[in-house]
Length: 296
Image 1 (spheres, rainbow, N blue to C red):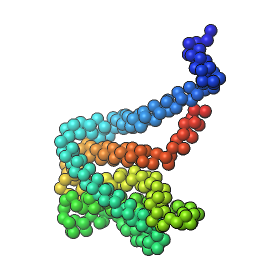
Image 2: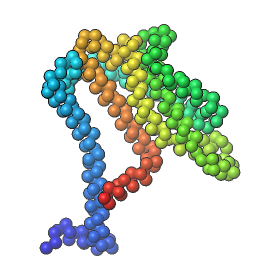
Image 3: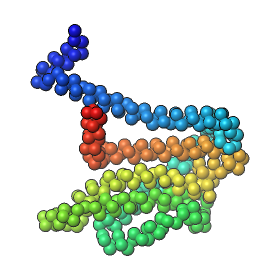
Image 4: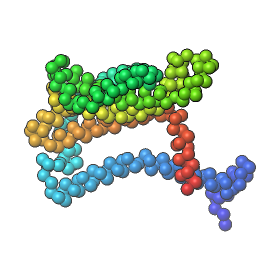
């Protein structure tokens, strides 16, 4: 005897002019897509929990001393114990990173547009940018201390310097990849060079731009931490240096955990803005993946 679900599907299929088999296949594809979305939402948490579980078990199994590698439980206790200094210093690190990252977005976007739209600027400035990016930023921090003193400014500038290059390169690449045939057609229709850049080049460069943001926001934290460990009186890097001088290794790892959480949070913000702004760039790919998964 047919089940109630099958009878309901047959009735809906009759109302829509579809065969019952086709409707059930569509329902199965929709259910598979829902399961895939749930798995995608749970998978990062499962991986993180599994990593910490293996870490905790390995520390206890091999009897690793705390000053060599603390267990996640010891790090959590240290975070609870020192939550006030961690919160205060993490706010300082977040502030300096966001300021440097914001400056990198502004100047990187402007310079990337200029380089991508001009062959002369591309050949003239690109070698200089590559050479400057090859310089280790930790070697620049002492110079910044001589110029600006110990404090927030060297950390902001270091975050800016280390996150500036990916934005310039990606924006310039996005604008430079506009097809020459399309440029010729637009010029034949009366479009000026600035019109082509504004209406075609910038939209073309947006996926590249947001891809660079996801890279730059993570390395910007690296720049802030480097500067804070060398020359700062506040911040997660400064706190980690103080903790290491007292051999408080759990607090050092707590600082690393806080930095990782801040980086992931800013990455998620960048992804959310990217989905709302340039979702059209990957919409076809996502639809194709859902269709393939449902038909498998």
